Length: 193
Image (cartoon, rainbow, N blue to C red; front, side):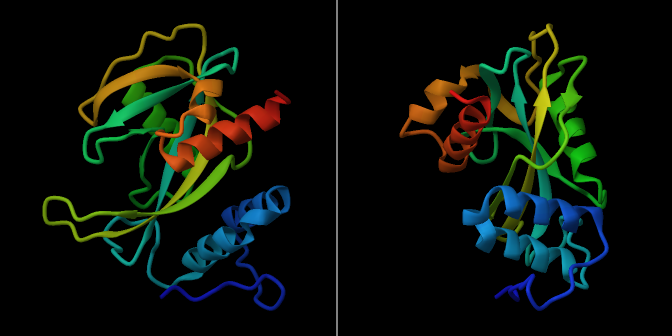
């Protein structure tokens, strides 16, 4: 069981990611319990940016939106068999925004992607055992990445398929992954629609 981080009594590490978690908690106070898990992982003595840390580790994802903000590029994930946002492991990189942008570029093949500032979403989810890697927690830190005018993606080896989907459709799709629906609702709230 992960130790809880209590921002009222524990000193937050002097780390830009910790500050980003605090800013996120201020924006989404109803997600304070989720943020506490992320703070606790960040404070752990065992490097949480390495995938070999099977008690849980950081990953980074991109909510990759079209230039007009009306659609998002999703991947039919090869290992998980679900439609999800693009992303991957930090593999030692503490700059999760850079990781999210790199993963978006690699998994989409799209040129001219732009990272928008700030955290967009946090999601702690269980990854089932796969090919001898035991089941473990992913602490996914999600950023908005905006596409340019060229939307002709290239499907990578990590995906069965990629597809541009209307954000409004995802928000209303009860069969969509719960965290993807949550991000769609956040995006629509942010856009004021």
